[in-house]
Image (tube, rainbow, N blue to C red; front, top):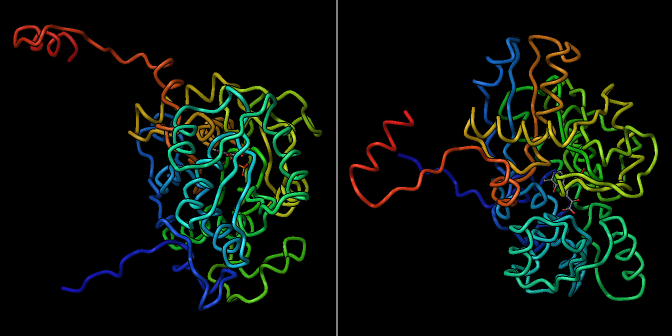
Length: 374
Ligand code: AN7
C-alpha cells in the first residue's frame, strides 16, 4: 500500500499560487482542506431539485475560515520581521490571530467589542496568550482604532485589509473546484466586512484565468496563472437585517444582530464587494435574526452539521432564494459555513428545544426516559 502525503496546510498545498518563496518560514496549523458536505434532508424538504453543498470552514484549526487568511498574513508578517500583530475583531479573527501568533512566537493584540463576542472565541484568544483589549464600542470603532494605532506603533494589522489575508482565503474556492470538478453555479456567503466574498471571487476568477485588473495587486505577481476551469459562479452575499449596509446602500452606524460575528456596519471591503456583485452578476440580501437561528437549528437537526449563527446566514438566504426560484432548479449551490457551532454555546443552548430528561441513576427510570421519547 502507498501512504498519502501528510497534509501540512494550504500554503504548502497551493504554494505555486501564493506569494511565498522557497525559503519562507511557513506559520501553519494545518488549515484548509475542509469538508464539502452534500446536504440530503434539507433539499428534499424544499421540494426542489437542487444540489446544495456546505463548505464546513468551522473545521479549521481555530474553528473558522479566518485561519486560511491568518496563515498567510502571519507568515508574511514574520518574513518581514514583525514582532507583533494587531486586529479588531468580532471574535473569530482574534482567536485565529492569537493562535498563529503563538505558533510564530510573536505577540497578538486583539481589540474586541465589550460583551459582544461569543464565549468560545474569547476563551480561545485568552488561552492562546493574546493581549485582549476590550473596548467600549463596536467592531467598527475597533477597526478605526487599529488603523490609527498601527501608524504609531510597530504592529502589523492582520484584519482583511491586509492583502495577504485574501490571498490565503481564496484557496477555499480552489478546493471547491477541485472537489466538484467544476465551479458551482452559485456560491453563498455570510457578509460582514466582505473580505471572504472578495477572496472567493479572486480564487474562482484566478482558477478560470479571468481575474480582472480591479483585484490585481502586487501580492499577486509571481504565481501560476494557468486556468483550471472555464466557469465562475454567481456570488450571493447575505447579511443580518440589523447589520446590512449592502442592502441599505450605505454604512450602518449602530449594527445589531444575534449573529455577533457579522455585527459590522462599516465593511472594510465595501468597494471590492460591489465589484464582485457586478462582475459575477450576483446579489445581496438580508436575513432576520429569527431566520438565521432557525436555519442554524435546522442544519444541526436535519444534517448533523453545527455551525455558528452568522454562518447559517448563507444557507438561510440560499433556501429562501431556492424557494422563490431566484436560484433556479438543477443548480449546484455551495454555502460557506464560516465558523463552528461550538464557538457560541450560549446562543445554541438558549434556542435549543431538545428534551433534557433528568432521572435517578437507576435502570427503570432510564428505560422509561427512552421509551417515552422514542
Ligand atoms: C463566522 O472575526 O470580522 O465578510 O472580526 O466570523 O469576510 O468579514 C468575522 C467575520 C462570517 C464575515 N462568518 O466575513 C472578525 C470578523 C463568521 C465570521 C464573517 C465573520 P467577512
